[in-house]
Image 1: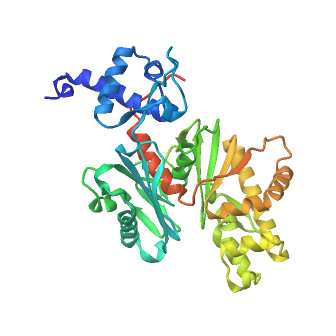
Image 2: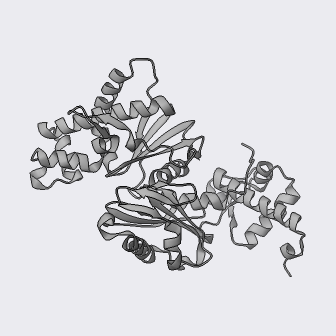
Image 3: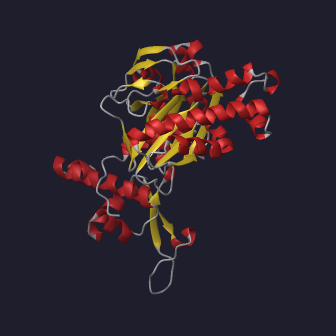
Length: 397
């Protein structure tokens, strides 16, 4: 009989909580000595040693020499010390994104580093709900590590939708979906006990942007996914802010005035289709109205392309300025394919913003997420990784 099986329930919960705290400490701080880990956990060396022994036996933690890490120990003989680190391949966490024009899949290991990824064009609105989830599971089957789902500890699904806290898609206008429960649809394709979580794609992107950084962004971050639609996620000191109904950050639905005196949604002014429609109407890109071709012509300073980019910069500055009056973020992070336009017109966005914000409101820093295009799928996987470690709180800085 195992030692854990002989413990009373209260003691077992404490032991399990301490083990999760140790895993989280090693994820947060990287490699640690046994003494450093004990200090982070607020435990004595003996108690911490029992935790390390259990995690090592379970294959979740391993010892590495200071020679391997380039961090020699401080013992008197000058020999390299022994450090502890997560065993990355002990398990993995999966994330998939069902977008308007593509499906993506990402797997991350116990260290939250991507170990497999695949993105494929897919017309989700035309295909319908069932076909979209079949495409996502098919992509996962192609991309999964060798052990398949056996070592997977959870799957996150990211969708451009107004999603309630419980995972119900209230409406996904760009996909044409209403009243959909993604986790229930995906469940028959997965192992029965595998945790499954559905999340708005912008929220997932925001978590992935925060999670994938060695140095956390301070304060409040507004993260935007800019594809056909524009979604936003708000992260406060590393934690996702969802709002009262799980809909916080939906700035793509802000209304902006148009040239005809009416109102249009922010995403209809700065989203992918808005750019490509304007490019086609202007006869740009030699009839090949792709984002890549448009960006090339903007970079080459083709006058009609520059004019469209200028209108995009003005609309982006106006929409962000309105959102920032409510959210007051420290920084804005742009992601998605359309974010590639921002560096070409950053100076124009800043100029328009200064005109709009002449009333003393601070202008936050704007950055483009430097991660790969599967940002929302990566974030969905990180949400499951985060939940796995969520039992550990209160680590010392």
